[in-house]
Figure: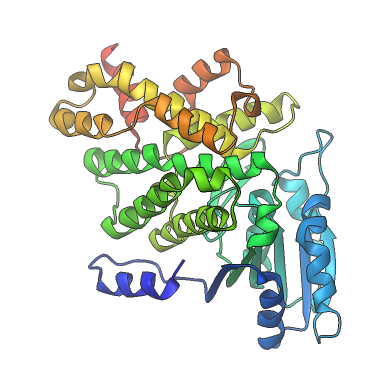
Length: 385
């Protein structure tokens, strides 16, 4: 991903965007060594490396080894999983990390995937120390964004915090990630079909802010991932690098906009609803992107089969344009076929039909954001559709 090209395009845009927070993005073999060089070159001497047991094995131990013989002192904090063996970005985890940040800590290193980055992002903002991102799997698009989805009092809520100052993704590490994590990252990207559409709906029906450039960047990221599905499924170095860069570009687009609208619509609301249900019932968590892969299919099918025939009653003023937006979506079966190319299966998302139906009714309440689902539900309450 070319940061300079993104900056050039931002400079040519008439829309006022948030400044790009990242100084450096590296996606290539040997990136772990470059990360250490970046830390030492910046004069940073005391860092707190945050990982879990698995991600420490995947990359954390190598970062510690590479720091030996340099001026960088590395302390390690391993996040503690819950009884279901999941690391959750909840109050206990956040406080645990906050207490590990000492006065001499100059920088935090997030070594892992989405949840680890969410926890570090929050703590980094609160203690006012920069953090550096070292992804261990191309599993989510939130690495470069400002948003930290956290579970507070059992409710999944996204808080705008800080982005990393730099990111170093070692392709050799990413290639070793479990297939389900790679499939999850691809699933998170396919969710952009519906999130981009919902964003346009919000702009059209409620006047919510909209950036054509950010939408364009997100669409480019989505297209790049889709066009290279077979290479991603083969886990080739090129395919994995393309998936990682697509996820990062989506995250950068969110950071530019300042909110998650480009990459999070009704499909993410369903995913968050299912996550909260698992927490409430003390079930093992499913991978975020794997859930988004399923929820995108569910939302597309619901939009096409249930909402589109009733659009005149949902929003008479914009019915024709809303219908065109729905028609532009691929079919749910096309999403499923793409996901299967990279190793996704329904076994990764054991959500029963009753919960799916419940989430289709209630999940839109999770965000104060206009989506086609919200338009439909609110119209239904008014007019008994």
